[in-house]
Length: 586
Image (tube, rainbow, N blue to C red; front, side, top):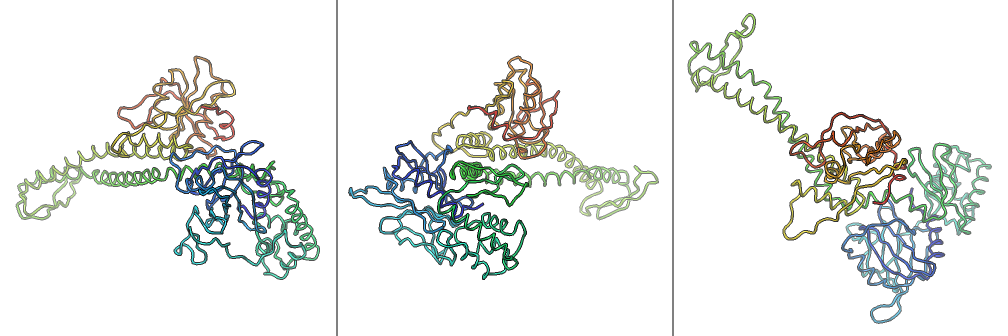
């Protein structure tokens, strides 16, 4: 699933053909380790996306609309200063190394024409975006590598840029299939795909597995177990791969797993998975990467921006859970309160037999048949009457505590449900505006303190809007405040309300406008409600639905909390494809 040097070479060619000579129009930094360079060229505009994130480092043209922070980070400001109206004059790659050099010609503050190079190093969690001047000096980098991080290679402003340590591996575009086969024969006797990885520069596991799959006809063999025919097949397939790399005539292919999610990608057709996975060809290498990483990047980007809220909710949930556990433990202790009353009654019934100074006495329990003796503890400092009153006080205290604890436990469970619902909404938030709304909700409920001074109100958000195949509008709340607004104020009595059963999720409403709602629309609304819930990835989800007039809000309930009766339940499977197809711009 890693972007290798071979695939990067196709991207280099795609960028060179599409953007060489383009001017930099704008630079954005959507998140801490990503930048977007808007390019202006004769054929139109394009956006070049660069990422140094550990789980998805890459470079490609993108059509995804990325939300930018209100205040650009310092690295973004630095790039804007040095790349203003710069011209892309070169795209370089050494061999099949996972490093790409973007050369920009620009004019400095003195009016001189200078060269600025953006170096994208794709090396997993060590990936980096480095800005280098024409003298090879590092101007800035998106990740600074100090001696505490690495003792091998430092990456800091002011230092000379040097390439990472090279490895003794063959470059497919600079060697022959025979040399590769010979290196594999002489190498370690490990699985063929691993032997290829150890012998070649800039190749990914999926490419090596595909070469091995062809050479061995799908058998899992070591390099030393190959016969002459298999080595002939190996050199034949390697020749095809080398021709693809030199002629840049690849076929961008994505592998889709049994769960329907992207699994891997390569620059050639993939056959190693047989019928267990599907493959999908793309028109461009950038388009494939956009499709492969878009959803994962959105989730990761929102996770970074919502980190403080996630930590707050986790701490509040842990605190509420611990408090609830202690209250339940105290409540279980209160169940013995009748024993206190019994001891008090027995002391009073036998008070003539007792005297001060006794620490324990065995008294007949006349409340049970055969009057068995019961050992009763006494405080020797108290009189018998005072001991009886002590037991009565403990009884009354336990009875009062039981009533209060029962109420507190209900409140604690309600709080946990509410925090769980906010956590679910937070994980599904897709924009900065949605995060602001959730932050405002937590302020209104007292979980976040409001700062001093004037605070701008978050932008007003519309509901998520869907249209069923029968033409009915389906509205979905984006947060608990919106859920309340939609269900209790904006929806009408005979609109139909949906919510996942005992699972946090968004309120979903079919706007009926007095019309009869067909079963297909009811089913599609239930699927949308299931998709917009914590159970969005489950196989089967129970969704309750009823008319709005049957939905009420309990007094003093948390945002989003409602009760309802006279409902029906549908069991559906959340369908992301259906939800995306029915969603309309809102």
